[in-house]
Image 1 (cartoon, rainbow, N blue to C red):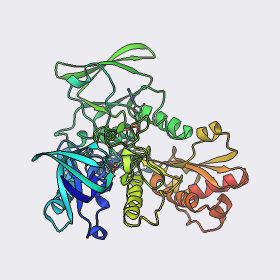
Image 2 (tube, rainbow, N blue to C red; image 1 turned 90 degrees about the horizontal axis):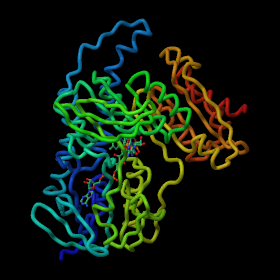
Image 3 (spheres, protein in one colour; image 1 turned 45 degrees about the vertical axis):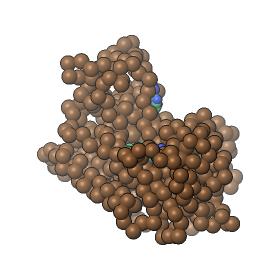
Image 4 (cartoon, rainbow, N blue to C red; image 1 turned 180 degrees about the vertical axis):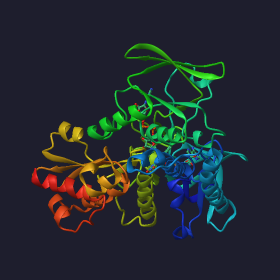
Length: 465
Ligand SMILES: Cc1cc2nc3c(=O)[nH]c(=O)nc-3n(C[C@H](O)[C@H](O)[C@H](O)COP(=O)(O)OP(=O)(O)OC[C@H]3O[C@@H](n4cnc5c(N)ncnc54)[C@H](O)[C@@H]3O)c2cc1C
Ligand SMILES: NC(=O)c1ccc[n+]([C@@H]2O[C@H](COP(=O)([O-])OP(=O)(O)OC[C@H]3O[C@@H](n4cnc5c(N)ncnc54)[C@H](O)[C@@H]3O)[C@@H](O)[C@H]2O)c1
């Protein structure tokens, strides 16, 4: 049995750990790849953040002509060359994935690459099932960075139709005429924007009464209203059956008005992701997992087995790349500095949904503050009420800020509208370093008439409340 100083399972954020600092370590990286082409480098690069955002940017451009009319500018969308759009994206990411794999396999990396699936057979023993057969390996230190995968709802017939998930939909050969998106979360909101902007008729089938339920309720409500204007949005549906008939996919659902059938050309299942703790047989490795299948870790990213660490989607409830990268920085430091361990960063974990409009959020939602009995004040300022919002003729965007009633520390911020993912960053910083609302609002100049004035004005309202 080959013995290593360090084994890393997973080439997403796990891959970033092994750099020159480990030059005198004997390292193994085990990875089975992601997506329909089993690419190296993990979800974000191949089937997640990067390809989706490259498509979203093209989609934002494609909807510009329709939105320019309100500015008195006459533009026309003459068409979308899907193969060109798709190939721009993967022409950028595939070489990075392939180059990363080549470097680990044959380059001057100090690591041995195992191309296959790794599973614990006992604590700190891993069996790799690869193209060259099976091999057991062990190590002093093991990092489980195995990520997550799309889940499928238990709907009769689903396995028998050619459905897509985010793992496959971005590489389709041609755009369908119609698409059903099952689910109303992050993937649904982003993909519905992308494909409808490119001319696909999008129907969204959701089981709850609103889209993006995890967001602050004002954001979720307004986004849902806009979704209903733009897409065939069908909330409160229970999916009973899926079948393939005459070259179409038919969904049988139960809704507020009774049973209905929805025919489509492409079905995108976007109903969440589950951690790959089962794929690595975490239990056989003695690793404690929670009810959602997340590998349990402490604030130093240590699992229940000494010398085994976990990071990213396999152990984090956030399922976000900046969180996986943050965890990886902690694990990397702690492997190299066992005498001075550092902790994972705390509470203010932000996210953005790159739909149309964009959404960005950090900290507490209003419904969470109420449920927790927190004494808070909140204020909303509309894009339409700042000068740059007039310039854009924006009528739907807003910034909402929650602060503690006594201390005026920021508890949460929620922005919906153009550039939301950038506008929120100073609020994330304020929360991280503890700047209170009056200091943030009046302790600096705000560039006039930038869009950031929407944040300034929301802060000023919180000061007055
Ligand atoms: C469509 C989509 C869009 C997203 N957009 C964003 C975004 O805009 N911003 C954001 O912050 N996050 C986004 N995310 C989430 C983000 O991609 C993930 O949180 C992040 O990539 C997780 O990184 P990771 O290192 O934990 O896992 P991964 O990157 O998934 O890496 C895990 C690796 O381990 C491998 N593996 C798993 N099990 C085994 C095994 N047993 N043996 C060997 N190898 C194994 C996998 O094949 C994979 O290569 C998006 C996700 C999706 C699906
Ligand atoms: N911009 C980003 O940061 C970004 C973008 C995409 C994905 N992601 C990450 O990937 C994760 C997965 O995204 P997602 O949209 O698949 O999950 P999600 O958790 O955001 O949404 C899942 C949706 O599926 C629905 N659902 C779940 N089970 C169902 C069932 N049995 N029948 C019908 N509907 C069901 C839920 O009600 C919800 O609407 C996200 O949680 C997020 O962390 C992040």
